[in-house]
Each structure stands twice: as structure tokens, then as C-alpha cells.
Image (cartoon, rainbow, N blue to C red):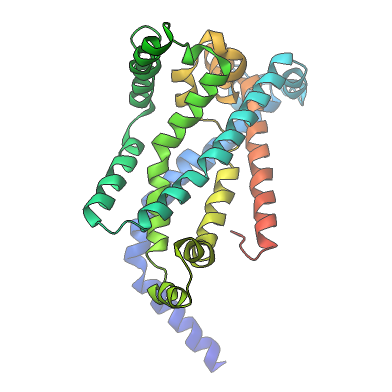
Length: 307
């Protein structure tokens, strides 16, 4: 009984000590409640024939009619396929990029050169996709693109990078990697810097070269961070960024560039079919949830789960 009372007193004291920190956290809670959790209630329009006059809760119920209509359209299958294809390519090609760059930068001994490279690769993360898209269009434009000027000198005619499906996918994936690679590199470098240097010294004394040290020391030490970021990345497999696609796409490559986010914008906002676009958005969110839970379940089998 005495122990229980002392434990309660300690909890109360700890709570009182942390009141300033909890007060600072209130705006964050308010933000998530207002802009993340409250809008979830709007998903109900996916099961209704929504109209502005009756509102969200006054509109008549439609059951699963919106989902049936959605998945009977041939356009929907193509959009889901494009979303999966672009997302998987981004994950497979983009996820290892910051890991590799962080491992390479960790071996650089000149601090000035290392910090310069870090700044250069991190800078695009702060640019909006409007700016990045303008740079990409300037580089690959057929009429005045910098790269096409060189291509025209060597081949005699420019190449339509942004008007061929395969080359457009290459430009799309590489521009996304270029923009976000620096942010991931900073995270991995911070984790690598926490590795005990004595481990490398011991491995070096045992005759292990740099590759062996990276394989047997660095990678195992940063594996928990890799797993956590990979689990979070799998949740975005169905969520190809709207800004990037919308800026880079054109009618010629719409068969590979039309994804769920652009479909929701086109059908929901421009076409005013809110219930249909909400059904697509809900489907996207459910697939993302399943992927996150699956990735976490697999990671837990190796004692690396996020939750």
C-alpha cells in the first residue's frame, strides 16, 4: 500500500514537472486533431450520394455503389497500375540512394568537402516542386532544353524525353530521387556518427578492409533506422506525389502518368464527383494501411518492428 502511494506521488510530481513541456505540445495535438483526424469523418461521403445542399451527413446513402462504379471503369485499373508502378520504382530505386550516399560521405575525411556535398544534395529538399519541375523542364525541353542541345549536336535531332513513356518515367523517378535524397542522407549520417569508433579500430586490427567494415559494422548498426524508414515508406506506395506528377505530366504520356492523386483532382475537384473521388481516396488509404501493417509484421519477425 505504501509502495502504491509513493508511486502515485512520483507520477504526480513527474506530471507537474512536465506541465510546461505538455503545454508546448498542445499546438501539435491541436494541429493533428484539426487537420489529420477530424477530416477522417469526411470519408463517409464515399458511401453517400454527396451534394452541397444536404451536406456530408444529410446526403442520401449510396452504400458501395461508388466503389462498384469505380472498379467497373477501365480507367481505374490503369490508374491503380500506374500508381503501383511509379511507387514501386520510387521505393526500389529511391530508398537505397540516401543509404549509399551516406556510406560514401562517411568515408570522406576532408570536412569542408563533406559539408559542401551535404549542402548541395540537401538543398533541393527545400525547393517546391514548381521550382524543381521548372528546372527539369528547362533541362529536358525539346526546343530549348540544355540536355537536348547536346543531344542534337551528337545525333542531329533532339530526343523527346518528356513525351516518351519510358524516358518520362526515368525523368520522373530521377527527379524525385534528386530532390529527397539529401534529406535521407542527413538522417543516416546522424545514425552512422553514433556508431562506436572502437568497433572500426578492432575490425581494422583484424585485417578488415573498408568494405568489410561497412558490411559487418555500419550496416548492422543502422539497420533499425533503415527498417523504420522502410516501413514508413511502404505506407506511401499508393501515394505518388500530386505536385510532381501534375507538373511533369502531359497528354502524350497520360497512359503512364495518370495516377490516383491526379484522378482525385480531376474527377473530384474539376468534375465535382466528390463521392467517387472519396471512394478512390479511401481505397488508397486502406491499401497503404495494409502495406504498413504487413511490412511491420515482417520486420517484427526479425525483431525490428516499429510497433
